[in-house]
Length: 69
Image 1 (tube, rainbow, N blue to C red):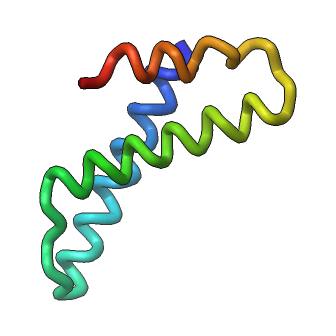
Image 2: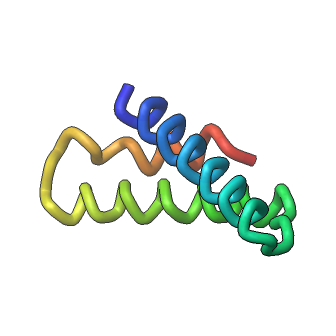
């Protein structure tokens, strides 16, 4: 449940940032760059939670890697 909720939140945040970039006149990012950004943020968050020592997130990284291709 955590992983789905977090991916949803980070996706909305990334889309919002892209919207703001375009409003300020910056060039649009490619969809690949946006996906890479989301992927990196999710991996960083899972890693930081695992480092804290919570056993609840031990399988989150495995699940994340299994769901993307």
